[in-house]
Image (cartoon, rainbow, N blue to C red; front, top):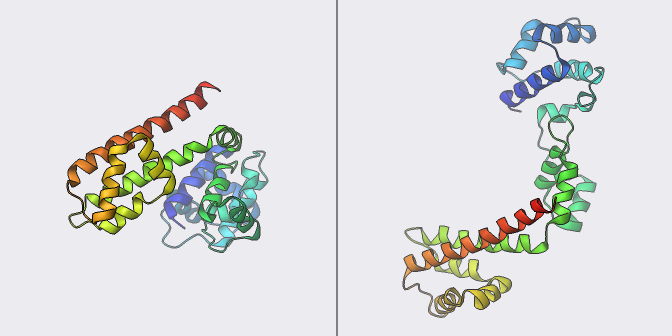
Length: 227
C-alpha cells in the first residue's frame, strides 16, 4: 500500500462526506472511542511511518458505510489498501479463458466500474460494442512497426528479432498489398539476413506507422461522430 494513494482516497472520502478532519475524527470516535487525532491526521496527510491498522481502516469504513452517500457505502479494505491480489479468482480465470483478457486488465476494468472514483461501465460497453475488429488489427500492426524501429535504433540490433517482428501473416499480407517496397525489403532481409540501409528502413516504417495511426484515429472519429 502506498501512503500517498491512501491519503488521496481519504481526502476524497472527506469531500464526499462533506466533513473536515475534525468532523471525521468525531465520526470515527462514534465507532472507536480510543482512536486518536494523530492517527486520523497522519493517514489523511500521508505521513504514516507504518501503515494504518486494520482497526483504523475498519473505523473509517464504518463511517462511510453508515453515511447517506451511496458511493461510500461500497468502500472496502481492498479498495483502500489497493491490494494487488496475485491469485486469479475462478470467475476471473473463466473470463480470461473465454476472451483472453489478462487478470491485470480485468482488475483494471473492475476499478473503472468502482462507484467511488469511476462509473464508466456504460461508456466502456458503448465503446467496445461499436469498436470494429480491425481497430485491434491496426493497433497490432502499429505495435509491430514500433517494435521494429525500437530494435533497429539499437547500436547492435538483433536481425533475428527484426525478422520476428515482421513475421505475421496478416501483417505481411497487408504490406504486400499496400506497401510493396517495405515487403520487398523484408523478403531480402529474411533471405540474406542483413539490412543494407537501416536508416531508410526506419524512415519507411515511420511512414507505415503514421498510416496505421491515421486509420486508428479515423475509426475513433467515426465512433465519436456516431454518438
